[in-house]
View 1 (tube, one colour):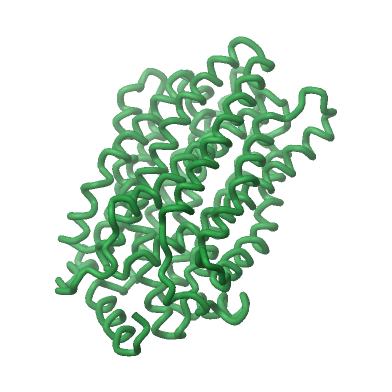
View 2 (tube, one colour; view 1 turned 60 degrees about the horizontal axis):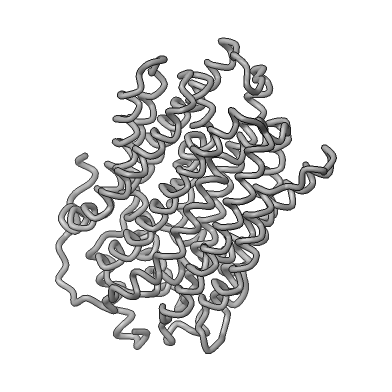
Length: 462
């Protein structure tokens, strides 16, 4: 830990403090988005393989193809968001435009028509998957960019993204009830699952649309940033890669998300086919999410005391050991599983709060170097990297399970069980450890950030 000295205390006035209404309006759409991502990330693969009877390798391929499209759509949305001019600002028009595609694509994922042939069903799911992630890009990238713009204050940003993380986790928790009902419905029939999934996706689409509109109506943007995006998406990407802080974070986020993606993809599989306790999966996720939600407020004063870097580094180590320990669990270790999930959730809430706050500081550094405000370009790059890691692991797990001989709703061979154990525990352990070690090289601290803001003020950009 000697490589992580405490950040110097910097006395600065709070710039652009956020009101309670702003925080609520900014965070509320993430409740709906979190609900959707919970079901898509944790249940869609199982829904596709066990209910729709689509081969794991095919679903893995669909998710992989969607990542190629993300390579175009993510930076394009980020760039266009930075360059948008309207009386609503740069970000809110995109959030408004995402209302219909977000709801429609989510409904398509969970409500495919019953009478589709096998080939048409695969095509439907391919369109739905690509459409869902494209629609989410329209919301997530401008929304994250909007959060970075709300304040320049080094620690106020922890509050903004802490509220966003809390909303996201609240959405995840609410989705667990739906997932639990879907798992119970699997005991009745595939048709019961499909009917329930279609019903719940319709309600979620409507409610999420209202939440997005609340954000558009009550969050105001800073006019001084309008018209200061990059000249084109290629120069934006060049600047991101030249920014030593940003390029390092890209690598760390990719590695970290490889580990997190496996947990997301295989939690239901691990509960059912390794621990022989499928009913424990929602409680495992609930334990993770509840502790992630409850502990979010404590990271803000701790970050102020010991620094963002030290705190995020420690959270990565704790996450690594919590998930890595799950590889040793046996049937009947339910309590240990819940405790490890709670520990991982607590550490995860730290990353969810501090991670985007640090990213926002890096964007200020870029502004000093280039004179541009391109939050959209930066968050689209980081978002693409995280989705790419998830897509890669979907492909890897899909092909790995097919190679090992996975058979849905059957007792698995030792080879399948061992494959699941390694993927579920070993991959996250090594990914988070490696990511933490790489993060030791990150150097942008509170003192340097204060100098950046002071110089921007001298240049009249604040």
